[in-house]
Image (cartoon, rainbow, N blue to C red; front, side, top):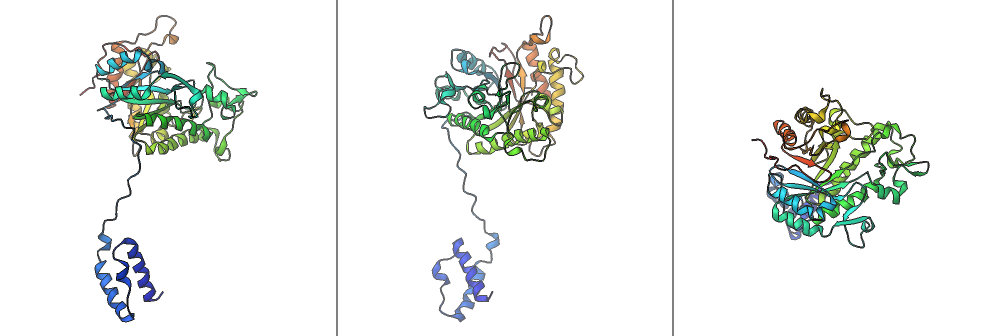
Length: 406
């Protein structure tokens, strides 16, 4: 390349950068060219020190509601029916009058129903059970009270979608397979299922929810023991050179990563519910949950650590009878796992505010004020300040001290 060609190449680059006008690079003859090159060299000697413009700000959807993230989320679970009837007034009073500050509200519940009526042109219109008559008005009331709203979206347990689209589910003898409780699941390998649920999550974000919490982000319990009996597609995962366990883990983890990316244009946190025992093992082989991998793609990880849901564990024969010790031992394990991650999420576990009579031949351990407070204390003593209370009927123990430890 000649000096003249090099010069004109530089001029073109500087024109694009806007360092001088087109008139400044028009010369009469070769002699002047040398002088102008020197001039340009002096003018641009500090180019390496120039600050380039910052990236153009990414568009983020604004719902029009303004919620502040609490000092630490301390919340309760609210079903669609509770959110849409007089029970909501009672639950709002509970949160507003205590150190609770958040609600996890069903937007897509366990059967697959949407809990509010979307627009008639919505693909989810026929799946709606409009328990919540006016979700926007509900959120505006929560905004007035300073109550942080979290939308619960059940993902892969979905009897409605399985019935409507059997090819997206698991089949046995040509029929949609159901578990012992009569529940059907849809297939985590199928990206059409991912898109279906992300559409609902985005609707919740547009309404004004501040956090999208995905539940049942997994294959059915015991899937590894029956996968050869079931008919289902592995979609794009079919050709991967992996064993079935690794494929399930990859599919579930990929969904979480995809969901995080898809929600990046909305001003929301993203959380995932996960079985507590997943943190205590390398990965849950049947259901496809790897605690560390899922945690790497979320803002919040919500382990379901109800004492009633553990068998003999942590050296505790009957965890349901020992809420403090059970939660304390779990928290130590979780902290160790999360501390190994480069950017660990916030830990916001689900704890127990219900009885488990199925564990007992006689009277069940009652979960009252002492038992709930014991779990909170165990979390706090291990540096975990956020938590969510689960009671399927939304009947929470009165007079509990939710105040975090100092």
